[in-house]
Length: 494
Image (tube, rainbow, N blue to C red; front, top):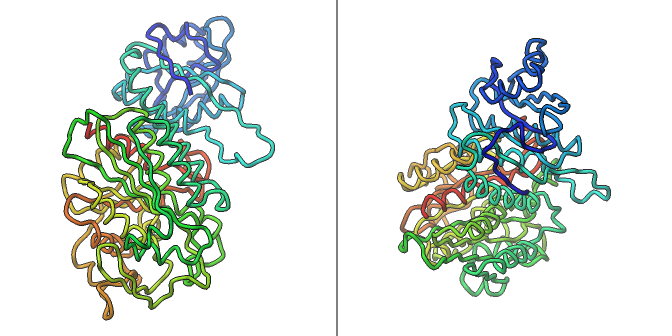
Protein backbone atom coordinates (compact mmCIF):
# COMPACT_ATOMS: atom_id res chain seq x y z
CA UNK A 1 0.00 0.00 0.00
CA UNK A 2 1.26 3.48 -0.87
CA UNK A 3 1.37 6.04 1.95
CA UNK A 4 1.19 9.82 1.41
CA UNK A 5 0.84 12.71 3.83
CA UNK A 6 -0.77 16.07 3.09
CA UNK A 7 -0.41 18.95 5.52
CA UNK A 8 -3.04 21.13 3.86
CA UNK A 9 -6.81 21.19 4.00
CA UNK A 10 -8.53 17.76 3.80
CA UNK A 11 -11.07 19.34 1.46
CA UNK A 12 -8.34 19.58 -1.17
CA UNK A 13 -7.34 15.90 -1.00
CA UNK A 14 -8.45 13.79 -3.97
CA UNK A 15 -9.64 10.38 -2.76
CA UNK A 16 -12.38 7.85 -3.26
CA UNK A 17 -13.21 8.20 0.43
CA UNK A 18 -12.23 10.95 2.87
CA UNK A 19 -12.69 9.78 6.46
CA UNK A 20 -12.46 10.99 10.02
CA UNK A 21 -13.34 9.52 13.42
CA UNK A 22 -16.01 10.45 15.96
CA UNK A 23 -16.59 9.24 19.49
CA UNK A 24 -19.81 8.30 21.26
CA UNK A 25 -21.79 10.36 22.20
CA UNK A 26 -21.40 11.84 18.75
CA UNK A 27 -19.77 15.23 18.56
CA UNK A 28 -17.90 16.47 15.51
CA UNK A 29 -14.19 17.27 16.01
CA UNK A 30 -12.90 20.59 14.61
CA UNK A 31 -11.89 18.98 11.31
CA UNK A 32 -15.33 17.38 11.03
CA UNK A 33 -17.03 20.71 11.73
CA UNK A 34 -15.11 22.34 8.89
CA UNK A 35 -16.03 19.52 6.50
CA UNK A 36 -19.64 19.76 7.63
CA UNK A 37 -19.66 23.47 6.79
CA UNK A 38 -18.38 22.69 3.30
CA UNK A 39 -21.15 20.14 2.66
CA UNK A 40 -23.88 22.51 3.89
CA UNK A 41 -24.44 20.80 7.23
CA UNK A 42 -25.02 17.37 5.73
CA UNK A 43 -22.99 15.57 8.40
CA UNK A 44 -24.79 17.27 11.29
CA UNK A 45 -28.10 16.47 9.63
CA UNK A 46 -27.23 12.76 9.68
CA UNK A 47 -26.37 13.05 13.38
CA UNK A 48 -29.69 14.73 14.15
CA UNK A 49 -31.57 12.04 12.23
CA UNK A 50 -29.81 9.33 14.24
CA UNK A 51 -28.17 7.83 11.16
CA UNK A 52 -24.65 8.85 12.12
CA UNK A 53 -23.44 7.51 15.45
CA UNK A 54 -20.04 7.15 17.06
CA UNK A 55 -20.46 3.48 17.93
CA UNK A 56 -17.24 1.51 17.66
CA UNK A 57 -16.76 0.23 14.11
CA UNK A 58 -19.83 1.94 12.66
CA UNK A 59 -19.36 3.68 9.29
CA UNK A 60 -21.63 6.34 7.83
CA UNK A 61 -21.14 7.48 4.23
CA UNK A 62 -22.08 10.81 2.69
CA UNK A 63 -21.80 11.43 -1.05
CA UNK A 64 -20.24 14.72 -2.04
CA UNK A 65 -20.90 16.81 -5.10
CA UNK A 66 -18.36 19.46 -5.92
CA UNK A 67 -17.71 20.75 -2.40
CA UNK A 68 -14.73 18.46 -1.87
CA UNK A 69 -12.21 16.74 -4.09
CA UNK A 70 -13.09 13.40 -2.44
CA UNK A 71 -16.02 11.46 -3.92
CA UNK A 72 -17.39 10.43 -0.53
CA UNK A 73 -17.12 11.36 3.12
CA UNK A 74 -16.95 8.55 5.69
CA UNK A 75 -17.34 8.91 9.43
CA UNK A 76 -15.92 6.04 11.49
CA UNK A 77 -17.08 5.48 15.05
CA UNK A 78 -14.50 4.82 17.77
CA UNK A 79 -16.90 4.34 20.68
CA UNK A 80 -16.68 5.88 24.11
CA UNK A 81 -12.99 5.34 24.78
CA UNK A 82 -11.58 6.17 21.37
CA UNK A 83 -8.35 4.28 22.04
CA UNK A 84 -5.88 3.01 19.45
CA UNK A 85 -7.64 -0.31 18.92
CA UNK A 86 -10.94 1.49 18.42
CA UNK A 87 -9.28 3.72 15.82
CA UNK A 88 -7.84 0.64 14.10
CA UNK A 89 -11.34 -0.82 14.04
CA UNK A 90 -12.86 2.36 12.58
CA UNK A 91 -10.15 2.61 9.91
CA UNK A 92 -10.62 -1.06 9.00
CA UNK A 93 -14.38 -0.61 8.67
CA UNK A 94 -13.90 2.39 6.39
CA UNK A 95 -11.33 0.52 4.29
CA UNK A 96 -13.61 -2.51 3.92
CA UNK A 97 -16.48 -0.27 2.86
CA UNK A 98 -14.23 1.54 0.39
CA UNK A 99 -13.10 -1.81 -1.02
CA UNK A 100 -16.69 -2.94 -1.48
CA UNK A 101 -17.29 0.21 -3.54
CA UNK A 102 -14.16 -0.37 -5.62
CA UNK A 103 -12.31 2.51 -4.00
CA UNK A 104 -8.53 2.49 -4.25
CA UNK A 105 -7.64 5.62 -2.29
CA UNK A 106 -8.66 6.42 1.27
CA UNK A 107 -7.74 9.71 2.93
CA UNK A 108 -7.88 9.98 6.72
CA UNK A 109 -8.04 13.20 8.69
CA UNK A 110 -5.86 13.24 11.80
CA UNK A 111 -7.60 15.19 14.53
CA UNK A 112 -7.36 16.27 18.15
CA UNK A 113 -8.89 13.29 19.93
CA UNK A 114 -6.58 12.67 22.87
CA UNK A 115 -4.22 10.36 20.98
CA UNK A 116 -0.79 11.57 19.80
CA UNK A 117 -0.66 12.11 16.05
CA UNK A 118 1.97 9.37 15.59
CA UNK A 119 -0.21 6.88 17.48
CA UNK A 120 -3.18 7.84 15.32
CA UNK A 121 -1.13 7.35 12.18
CA UNK A 122 0.02 3.89 13.21
CA UNK A 123 -3.52 2.84 14.14
CA UNK A 124 -5.02 4.08 10.89
CA UNK A 125 -2.33 2.37 8.80
CA UNK A 126 -2.92 -0.87 10.70
CA UNK A 127 -6.67 -0.67 10.19
CA UNK A 128 -6.53 0.13 6.48
CA UNK A 129 -3.82 -2.46 5.76
CA UNK A 130 -5.06 -5.31 7.96
CA UNK A 131 -8.82 -4.78 7.87
CA UNK A 132 -9.64 -5.67 4.24
CA UNK A 133 -7.28 -8.68 4.20
CA UNK A 134 -8.81 -11.59 2.28
CA UNK A 135 -7.88 -15.15 3.27
CA UNK A 136 -9.45 -16.66 0.16
CA UNK A 137 -6.40 -16.47 -2.07
CA UNK A 138 -6.93 -20.08 -3.20
CA UNK A 139 -10.34 -19.31 -4.68
CA UNK A 140 -10.40 -19.55 -8.46
CA UNK A 141 -12.45 -16.35 -8.77
CA UNK A 142 -10.92 -13.35 -7.07
CA UNK A 143 -13.42 -10.59 -6.47
CA UNK A 144 -11.40 -8.81 -3.81
CA UNK A 145 -10.56 -5.14 -4.23
CA UNK A 146 -8.01 -3.68 -1.82
CA UNK A 147 -7.17 -0.12 -0.91
CA UNK A 148 -3.94 0.76 -2.71
CA UNK A 149 -3.24 4.23 -1.34
CA UNK A 150 -3.71 5.87 2.05
CA UNK A 151 -3.38 9.63 2.49
CA UNK A 152 -3.00 11.01 6.00
CA UNK A 153 -4.03 14.64 6.06
CA UNK A 154 -4.76 17.59 8.29
CA UNK A 155 -2.62 19.76 10.58
CA UNK A 156 0.47 17.90 11.78
CA UNK A 157 0.25 15.16 9.15
CA UNK A 158 3.73 15.87 7.82
CA UNK A 159 5.19 15.09 11.22
CA UNK A 160 3.93 11.50 11.18
CA UNK A 161 5.20 10.51 7.74
CA UNK A 162 8.05 8.37 9.07
CA UNK A 163 5.84 6.61 11.63
CA UNK A 164 3.22 5.89 8.98
CA UNK A 165 5.77 4.44 6.56
CA UNK A 166 7.20 2.24 9.32
CA UNK A 167 3.73 1.00 10.26
CA UNK A 168 3.00 0.23 6.63
CA UNK A 169 6.11 -1.94 6.29
CA UNK A 170 5.21 -3.88 9.43
CA UNK A 171 1.56 -4.30 8.41
CA UNK A 172 2.64 -5.64 5.02
CA UNK A 173 4.80 -8.30 6.67
CA UNK A 174 1.96 -9.04 9.09
CA UNK A 175 -0.28 -9.90 6.15
CA UNK A 176 2.47 -12.12 4.73
CA UNK A 177 2.47 -13.98 8.03
CA UNK A 178 -1.30 -14.36 7.73
CA UNK A 179 -0.84 -15.89 4.28
CA UNK A 180 1.55 -18.46 5.76
CA UNK A 181 -0.70 -19.37 8.68
CA UNK A 182 -3.84 -19.58 6.53
CA UNK A 183 -2.08 -21.73 3.92
CA UNK A 184 -3.18 -25.36 3.65
CA UNK A 185 -0.77 -27.89 5.15
CA UNK A 186 -0.08 -29.49 1.79
CA UNK A 187 1.24 -26.09 0.67
CA UNK A 188 2.90 -24.78 3.83
CA UNK A 189 5.40 -27.46 4.85
CA UNK A 190 8.69 -27.08 6.75
CA UNK A 191 10.41 -26.84 3.38
CA UNK A 192 8.04 -24.04 2.32
CA UNK A 193 8.81 -22.07 5.49
CA UNK A 194 12.52 -22.48 4.88
CA UNK A 195 12.08 -21.19 1.33
CA UNK A 196 10.13 -18.20 2.64
CA UNK A 197 12.95 -17.42 5.08
CA UNK A 198 15.62 -17.85 2.42
CA UNK A 199 13.78 -15.52 0.07
CA UNK A 200 13.42 -12.91 2.83
CA UNK A 201 17.12 -13.08 3.64
CA UNK A 202 18.08 -12.69 -0.03
CA UNK A 203 16.40 -9.27 -0.10
CA UNK A 204 18.51 -7.70 2.62
CA UNK A 205 22.25 -7.17 2.75
CA UNK A 206 22.69 -7.76 6.47
CA UNK A 207 20.51 -10.84 6.92
CA UNK A 208 21.73 -14.40 6.47
CA UNK A 209 19.83 -17.68 6.24
CA UNK A 210 20.60 -21.27 7.13
CA UNK A 211 18.52 -24.39 7.57
CA UNK A 212 19.37 -27.80 9.00
CA UNK A 213 17.75 -30.96 7.64
CA UNK A 214 16.85 -34.15 9.55
CA UNK A 215 20.31 -35.69 9.57
CA UNK A 216 21.96 -32.46 10.71
CA UNK A 217 19.33 -31.92 13.41
CA UNK A 218 19.91 -35.43 14.74
CA UNK A 219 23.70 -35.18 14.55
CA UNK A 220 23.61 -31.85 16.41
CA UNK A 221 22.10 -33.66 19.39
CA UNK A 222 18.57 -32.26 19.13
CA UNK A 223 16.88 -35.41 20.34
CA UNK A 224 13.60 -33.74 21.28
CA UNK A 225 13.14 -32.08 17.89
CA UNK A 226 14.18 -35.26 16.10
CA UNK A 227 11.65 -37.35 18.03
CA UNK A 228 8.68 -35.16 17.13
CA UNK A 229 9.56 -35.06 13.44
CA UNK A 230 10.01 -38.82 12.95
CA UNK A 231 6.39 -39.66 12.13
CA UNK A 232 6.12 -37.46 9.03
CA UNK A 233 7.33 -38.00 5.49
CA UNK A 234 7.86 -34.23 5.19
CA UNK A 235 11.38 -33.61 6.52
CA UNK A 236 11.93 -31.12 9.37
CA UNK A 237 13.90 -27.91 9.10
CA UNK A 238 15.68 -25.88 11.76
CA UNK A 239 15.50 -22.42 10.20
CA UNK A 240 17.86 -19.67 11.31
CA UNK A 241 17.87 -16.04 10.24
CA UNK A 242 20.60 -13.74 11.53
CA UNK A 243 20.31 -9.97 11.16
CA UNK A 244 23.54 -8.10 11.91
CA UNK A 245 23.49 -4.42 10.93
CA UNK A 246 26.91 -2.77 10.77
CA UNK A 247 26.11 -0.11 13.37
CA UNK A 248 24.02 -1.79 16.06
CA UNK A 249 23.19 0.68 18.82
CA UNK A 250 23.81 -1.85 21.59
CA UNK A 251 26.66 -4.09 20.49
CA UNK A 252 26.31 -6.43 23.46
CA UNK A 253 22.61 -7.16 22.82
CA UNK A 254 21.39 -9.92 20.53
CA UNK A 255 17.63 -10.37 20.55
CA UNK A 256 16.67 -14.01 20.13
CA UNK A 257 13.24 -14.69 18.61
CA UNK A 258 12.17 -18.34 18.65
CA UNK A 259 8.96 -19.51 16.97
CA UNK A 260 7.19 -22.85 17.11
CA UNK A 261 6.35 -24.03 13.58
CA UNK A 262 4.42 -27.30 13.57
CA UNK A 263 3.00 -27.06 10.05
CA UNK A 264 0.38 -29.69 10.87
CA UNK A 265 -0.37 -31.14 14.26
CA UNK A 266 -2.39 -34.36 14.27
CA UNK A 267 -1.36 -34.98 17.88
CA UNK A 268 0.86 -37.85 16.81
CA UNK A 269 -0.01 -41.19 18.40
CA UNK A 270 -1.94 -39.25 21.07
CA UNK A 271 -4.29 -38.41 18.22
CA UNK A 272 -6.44 -35.29 18.38
CA UNK A 273 -10.22 -35.48 17.84
CA UNK A 274 -11.30 -35.10 14.23
CA UNK A 275 -13.46 -32.06 14.98
CA UNK A 276 -11.71 -28.90 13.72
CA UNK A 277 -8.47 -30.77 13.10
CA UNK A 278 -8.16 -28.84 9.85
CA UNK A 279 -7.24 -25.80 11.94
CA UNK A 280 -4.09 -27.57 13.12
CA UNK A 281 -2.40 -26.17 10.01
CA UNK A 282 -2.10 -23.00 12.12
CA UNK A 283 0.21 -24.55 14.72
CA UNK A 284 3.09 -22.76 13.02
CA UNK A 285 1.75 -19.29 13.89
CA UNK A 286 4.67 -18.50 16.19
CA UNK A 287 7.26 -19.46 13.59
CA UNK A 288 5.43 -17.57 10.87
CA UNK A 289 5.38 -14.44 13.03
CA UNK A 290 9.09 -14.68 13.79
CA UNK A 291 10.06 -15.07 10.13
CA UNK A 292 7.81 -12.23 8.97
CA UNK A 293 9.02 -9.96 11.78
CA UNK A 294 12.60 -10.53 10.66
CA UNK A 295 11.64 -9.32 7.21
CA UNK A 296 10.10 -6.17 8.69
CA UNK A 297 13.10 -5.53 10.95
CA UNK A 298 15.54 -5.86 8.06
CA UNK A 299 13.44 -3.72 5.71
CA UNK A 300 13.29 -1.00 8.36
CA UNK A 301 17.08 -1.31 8.81
CA UNK A 302 16.74 -1.22 12.59
CA UNK A 303 20.17 -0.94 14.27
CA UNK A 304 19.88 -3.98 16.53
CA UNK A 305 21.24 -7.51 16.18
CA UNK A 306 18.53 -10.18 15.99
CA UNK A 307 18.73 -13.95 15.77
CA UNK A 308 15.64 -15.94 14.74
CA UNK A 309 15.37 -19.69 15.32
CA UNK A 310 12.35 -21.56 13.96
CA UNK A 311 12.07 -25.33 14.45
CA UNK A 312 9.59 -26.66 11.90
CA UNK A 313 8.12 -30.11 11.35
CA UNK A 314 4.84 -32.01 11.27
CA UNK A 315 3.52 -34.05 14.20
CA UNK A 316 2.10 -37.17 12.58
CA UNK A 317 1.34 -40.78 13.51
CA UNK A 318 3.34 -43.41 11.68
CA UNK A 319 5.64 -46.34 12.04
CA UNK A 320 8.52 -44.11 12.99
CA UNK A 321 6.57 -41.92 15.39
CA UNK A 322 7.76 -41.29 18.91
CA UNK A 323 5.58 -42.93 21.56
CA UNK A 324 4.20 -42.27 25.01
CA UNK A 325 6.76 -43.86 27.31
CA UNK A 326 9.77 -42.94 25.20
CA UNK A 327 12.65 -41.16 26.92
CA UNK A 328 14.50 -38.68 24.75
CA UNK A 329 17.57 -36.51 25.30
CA UNK A 330 17.40 -32.80 24.48
CA UNK A 331 20.24 -30.68 23.14
CA UNK A 332 21.21 -29.44 26.61
CA UNK A 333 21.59 -33.05 27.80
CA UNK A 334 18.41 -33.24 29.90
CA UNK A 335 16.22 -36.29 29.52
CA UNK A 336 12.47 -36.16 28.94
CA UNK A 337 9.86 -38.86 29.45
CA UNK A 338 7.16 -38.56 26.79
CA UNK A 339 3.72 -38.96 28.33
CA UNK A 340 1.72 -37.26 25.58
CA UNK A 341 2.81 -36.92 21.97
CA UNK A 342 0.38 -34.02 21.56
CA UNK A 343 2.58 -31.96 23.89
CA UNK A 344 5.09 -31.71 21.05
CA UNK A 345 5.55 -27.96 20.72
CA UNK A 346 7.46 -27.66 23.95
CA UNK A 347 9.79 -30.44 22.79
CA UNK A 348 10.86 -28.78 19.55
CA UNK A 349 11.13 -25.45 21.38
CA UNK A 350 13.36 -27.04 24.03
CA UNK A 351 16.10 -27.69 21.49
CA UNK A 352 15.51 -24.42 19.66
CA UNK A 353 15.81 -22.37 22.87
CA UNK A 354 19.08 -24.04 23.79
CA UNK A 355 20.36 -23.51 20.26
CA UNK A 356 19.38 -19.81 20.30
CA UNK A 357 21.17 -19.18 23.60
CA UNK A 358 24.30 -21.08 22.50
CA UNK A 359 24.26 -19.09 19.25
CA UNK A 360 24.60 -15.82 21.15
CA UNK A 361 21.08 -14.60 21.96
CA UNK A 362 21.20 -12.42 25.08
CA UNK A 363 17.44 -11.75 25.38
CA UNK A 364 15.08 -14.51 24.21
CA UNK A 365 11.38 -14.33 23.40
CA UNK A 366 9.58 -17.39 22.10
CA UNK A 367 6.14 -17.42 20.50
CA UNK A 368 4.09 -20.58 20.34
CA UNK A 369 0.53 -21.74 19.82
CA UNK A 370 1.26 -23.96 22.77
CA UNK A 371 -1.82 -24.80 24.85
CA UNK A 372 -5.58 -24.90 24.40
CA UNK A 373 -5.89 -23.97 28.05
CA UNK A 374 -4.59 -20.45 27.39
CA UNK A 375 -7.56 -19.96 25.05
CA UNK A 376 -9.92 -21.00 27.85
CA UNK A 377 -8.19 -18.62 30.24
CA UNK A 378 -7.60 -15.58 28.00
CA UNK A 379 -9.86 -15.95 24.98
CA UNK A 380 -8.65 -14.49 21.70
CA UNK A 381 -7.53 -11.01 22.76
CA UNK A 382 -4.55 -11.51 25.09
CA UNK A 383 -1.57 -13.83 24.77
CA UNK A 384 -0.20 -15.29 27.99
CA UNK A 385 3.22 -13.91 28.93
CA UNK A 386 5.61 -15.89 31.12
CA UNK A 387 9.11 -14.69 31.93
CA UNK A 388 12.12 -15.15 34.19
CA UNK A 389 13.13 -11.47 34.16
CA UNK A 390 11.11 -8.43 35.31
CA UNK A 391 12.85 -5.87 33.11
CA UNK A 392 12.47 -8.05 30.00
CA UNK A 393 8.80 -8.54 30.87
CA UNK A 394 8.29 -4.77 30.96
CA UNK A 395 9.90 -4.38 27.54
CA UNK A 396 7.64 -7.02 26.01
CA UNK A 397 4.56 -5.53 27.66
CA UNK A 398 5.39 -2.05 26.39
CA UNK A 399 5.87 -3.31 22.83
CA UNK A 400 2.60 -5.23 23.04
CA UNK A 401 0.53 -2.28 24.19
CA UNK A 402 2.07 0.05 21.62
CA UNK A 403 1.14 -2.24 18.73
CA UNK A 404 -2.17 -3.89 19.61
CA UNK A 405 -0.61 -7.36 20.00
CA UNK A 406 -1.78 -7.53 23.59
CA UNK A 407 -0.29 -9.68 26.37
CA UNK A 408 -1.21 -10.49 29.96
CA UNK A 409 1.49 -11.44 32.42
CA UNK A 410 0.94 -14.85 34.01
CA UNK A 411 2.64 -16.47 37.02
CA UNK A 412 5.74 -18.61 36.61
CA UNK A 413 6.42 -19.87 40.11
CA UNK A 414 8.88 -22.69 40.66
CA UNK A 415 6.13 -24.74 42.30
CA UNK A 416 4.90 -25.58 38.80
CA UNK A 417 8.05 -27.69 38.38
CA UNK A 418 6.46 -30.49 40.38
CA UNK A 419 3.87 -31.05 37.63
CA UNK A 420 6.56 -32.27 35.26
CA UNK A 421 8.52 -34.45 37.69
CA UNK A 422 9.18 -37.94 36.28
CA UNK A 423 10.30 -41.07 38.14
CA UNK A 424 12.25 -42.18 35.07
CA UNK A 425 13.82 -39.05 33.54
CA UNK A 426 14.76 -35.49 34.40
CA UNK A 427 11.22 -34.42 33.55
CA UNK A 428 8.14 -35.39 31.57
CA UNK A 429 6.51 -33.39 28.83
CA UNK A 430 2.96 -33.24 30.21
CA UNK A 431 0.94 -33.73 33.37
CA UNK A 432 -1.94 -36.09 34.10
CA UNK A 433 -3.60 -33.34 36.13
CA UNK A 434 -5.83 -30.91 34.24
CA UNK A 435 -4.35 -27.96 36.08
CA UNK A 436 -2.26 -24.97 35.07
CA UNK A 437 -1.38 -26.33 31.65
CA UNK A 438 0.03 -23.07 30.20
CA UNK A 439 2.11 -22.47 33.33
CA UNK A 440 3.58 -25.96 33.49
CA UNK A 441 4.35 -25.78 29.76
CA UNK A 442 6.21 -22.51 30.35
CA UNK A 443 8.00 -24.05 33.33
CA UNK A 444 9.06 -26.93 31.09
CA UNK A 445 10.53 -24.47 28.57
CA UNK A 446 12.42 -22.68 31.33
CA UNK A 447 14.55 -25.80 31.74
CA UNK A 448 16.13 -25.08 28.35
CA UNK A 449 16.66 -21.30 28.22
CA UNK A 450 20.09 -21.15 29.85
CA UNK A 451 21.30 -18.00 31.57
CA UNK A 452 19.76 -14.65 30.70
CA UNK A 453 16.42 -12.94 30.17
CA UNK A 454 13.74 -15.08 28.54
CA UNK A 455 10.02 -14.72 27.96
CA UNK A 456 7.43 -17.02 26.48
CA UNK A 457 4.22 -15.99 24.72
CA UNK A 458 1.45 -18.57 24.47
CA UNK A 459 -0.43 -17.25 21.45
CA UNK A 460 -2.87 -20.10 20.85
CA UNK A 461 -5.90 -17.81 21.19
CA UNK A 462 -4.54 -14.77 19.39
CA UNK A 463 -2.75 -16.16 16.33
CA UNK A 464 -5.90 -17.57 14.72
CA UNK A 465 -9.49 -16.45 15.26
CA UNK A 466 -12.16 -19.13 15.20
CA UNK A 467 -14.81 -16.41 14.81
CA UNK A 468 -14.83 -12.69 14.18
CA UNK A 469 -13.54 -10.54 17.06
CA UNK A 470 -15.66 -7.66 15.75
CA UNK A 471 -12.70 -5.33 15.51
CA UNK A 472 -10.20 -4.57 12.78
CA UNK A 473 -9.80 -8.31 12.19
CA UNK A 474 -13.11 -8.57 10.42
CA UNK A 475 -13.19 -12.28 9.62
CA UNK A 476 -12.01 -15.55 11.17
CA UNK A 477 -8.53 -16.75 10.30
CA UNK A 478 -4.92 -15.83 10.92
CA UNK A 479 -4.09 -12.48 12.55
CA UNK A 480 -0.33 -12.32 12.11
CA UNK A 481 -0.10 -11.89 15.88
CA UNK A 482 3.42 -11.15 17.02
CA UNK A 483 4.85 -9.48 13.92
CA UNK A 484 4.03 -5.98 15.13
CA UNK A 485 5.12 -6.79 18.68
CA UNK A 486 8.49 -8.20 17.64
CA UNK A 487 9.23 -5.34 15.27
CA UNK A 488 8.39 -2.81 17.97
CA UNK A 489 10.50 -4.67 20.51
CA UNK A 490 13.47 -4.54 18.14
CA UNK A 491 12.87 -0.82 17.54
CA UNK A 492 12.98 -0.17 21.29
CA UNK A 493 16.44 -1.75 21.46
CA UNK A 494 17.67 0.33 18.51
